[in-house]
Length: 324
Image 1 (cartoon, rainbow, N blue to C red):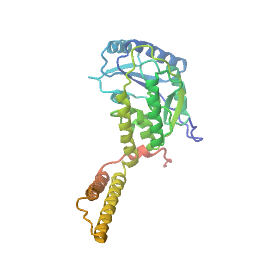
Image 2: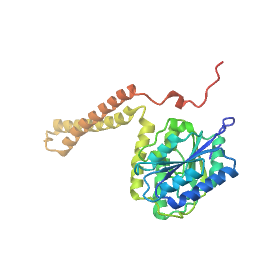
Image 3: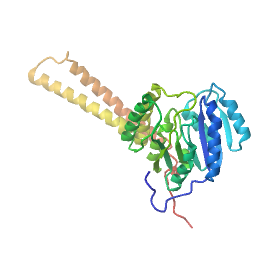
Image 4: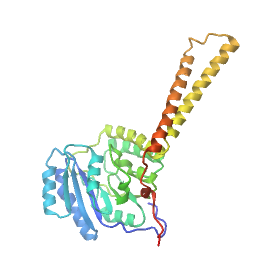
């Protein structure tokens, strides 16, 4: 993690912890006990532990109800069905009142003993701190695709993190005033936050083997992840200038098509050969038509974007001078 520039460190303030839950009945009492013990030992200003039941099919909700009744900081939320991790996090974050928000998984693989280090990293000047599970105690079938995904995301986004998939992260509250979670975009919050100028850090954290239940990992998760990566790249690079994306592709197709047609026209004029049956003629015509359509689509996107409200100006300002 890179240190913040001198003089920019800020106290992160009170803490809300958001934990999405899906079929984690046996781990919940242990997790809450560990969080409360660490908060007490480290004198953390813990305001909330928000447990969001994302449509669990086991007895997770009755356990959450008991924990909320017996421990003051614990708040339980039950969703109507399984909406996915991003939605569960979004619901929990909306209920969080702390100036610092920590997200972590409920399966006991994330270690609550790391909480003070996350708070210290925020106090040192970061706006978002992502946990890097090292070493990671998961099967190769899970870690290998994750490494490939993390490498591709870091290269394409320019955000040099080692573990985008880690659910163990700490945020300053203002990040979520600008970034909304949906789909599977929770793993890309560092990319979205970085594009708005927030300072991103990384922390090596302990990772434990799973003690209860089974992993919810599936190949479809990473397939969806790569599609979401394309979405995030489009949002962060072209949201304010969509014409650059569509206009560039359209212009390229248009030039290729015109080049092909000019070549065939010259060939007809010089040699007199028949070009009407050549597949290259059809390709050239299609390239010109599609190129014009994409180009005009980019212009239309620019017109729509010019009339749409952008990010709130305050979301882009790091600090202000004092006006007397």
